[in-house]
Length: 390
Image (tube, rainbow, N blue to C red):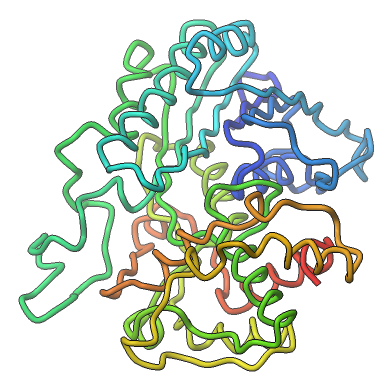
């Protein structure tokens, strides 16, 4: 990831999201073996400022081996405002690497609306950066499962049989026939093919912690458990039997950040990679762990007639959350900032098992793995240690 003898200048788009926060902290990591240790500056772009309670990993000016900690410059830009994007990014002529790890919320949008808006945002960023950053070497894009053909529309290369799922899903599944983020990436750097390389990262369900995120699964579950504890209620499983009993996969946000940086250093770039922890889990493994951290009784799958939507069940819980904050001396947070109920509903109501293979990454030399149960446990511990939940 070296740039012809110069140190890297990184632009992180979506710096307050789950993966963006992991990237920022990795770039600031005080470790002489850090693969991004030669980074000298980070432009951290987000739509809103980070809340005052959120701190990055490093607050000192120098690392333990006396190398200067990269300068972090925070930029606050609405990516839907093309003129604002150009004004903010065009002057940043020293950028060498871009990590685009944001996605505008699409709750209530159609797939067409979501892809149109997000494709325009990415194109706006690339249009501002590509012509004006002569030392640019690599653009890494986080997309997702929805960037490949819909896995629930069989048959696809034998991935489905008439009687069910035969996955796991690989990167060579057919792409959608409508324009998506990955198309926008390739189009955006077309003028500098051979000069600028790219990588695409398609994570499974993301587990992590961030100050703000439109897709914050663990944070939402912790808040749900805390509210159950406050109200003396059972932590009920709201979702499907398939999600409860079947195999799922997930990806730690830190692992996505590590994979994106690894890809930027590859000898053979211009590839798309699935990104997962490398194992599978069942939600019935995680549910008792969640309940134990908040001291509440729990119930698993109780039948189709007992399924419910958290987005509906949590309506009007803002006063309850305010009481929990006051009683436990937690940091002041807004319920909407740290929860995404519709995302939880989408994950726990899966009607088919959906897991992905990491074989391609392994074949290219990426062998990092995380234990998902341990990852889930760690995320809850971090939420509690940060006094976001009791």
